[in-house]
Length: 164
Image 1 (cartoon, rainbow, N blue to C red):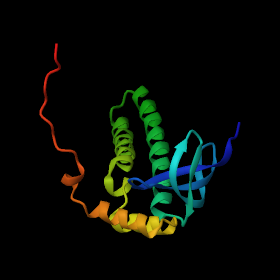
Image 2 (image 1 turned 30 degrees about the horizontal axis):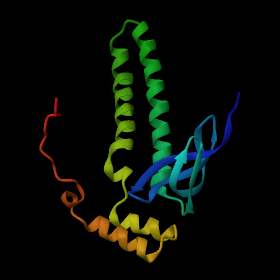
Image 3 (image 1 turned 45 degrees about the vertical axis):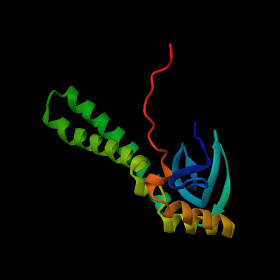
């Protein structure tokens, strides 16, 4: 069975309070092949999303393809590693094992590194402008990004045990 259609891949550049950037891809069996258009996604439920079409993000396209490559190469190296394991030659396990670990690390990093997942202040303003955010909204973004991190976080409260 062949499954084809379009869906979002390459989630990057999250802007707090606004959304994140993703790319709508044409896919076959959920492998992102052809980038169709960029989106600022403001909400997503299941396979549907709400947002604004924006210009294509090279970062989003590259992340979608890189993440898929990490999965395919990682799974392939695990299969070859298992085949090498059955041959009882430990030398056959080194390269596939290292490659599988590198792919797992790359996949995790692509979802956790802040420079991939969150927009810089300049990029956040660029995304907001492209999505048609009002001047008032742009000013709110400027203030949010210029506020020190400590001022945004709630102050620590001393712990008090619950009453018995």
